[in-house]
Length: 206
Image (tube, rainbow, N blue to C red; front, side, top):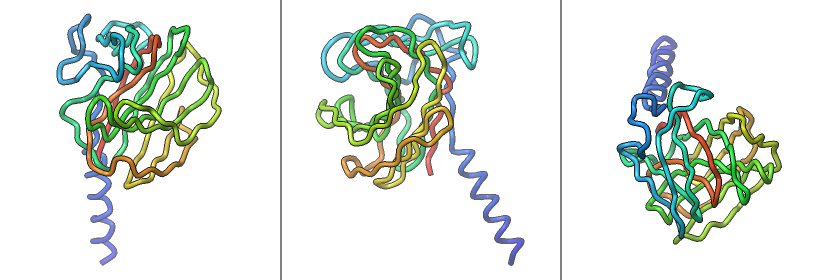
């Protein structure tokens, strides 16, 4: 019986690991948005999402770069649909007078309805939000040093109405919200004039 239990636990762990997928952008054409993603924005302005070469990339040679200016630039992975799971990305804020932000989005219904966790190098904080009909509302925030020009890791684990945000490997926020209960897509996010690089975008179901 004990052997069967151990085998069952091992199989569960393997299944959990095998459900994860990582996008590193390394074999994609540079100078254009990645295929299979919706490169867009929430609100006004003009987001500019493109795959670019970057010598500092955690996974070389390419990164996903946002260099336009819009209310909230978003880039959504079209073929992902998660209700419970996780999303993680490495990001590097490199410029922006109004904001230097990088974030992940999940349970995305469309470009106006989703959850966000983001870190901002100008504000030195990490915040979790929901965006409903294009309106962003924060429901938990913590001060954290977010260094510009440095790669960071941002991750959210989500199950039901419970969310855990980790920044550079440390759990920084635990929160609850009921806005979006159904499965949705995942992706990355910036704000305003943030110029931000993304790499090693990983997501998986629970």
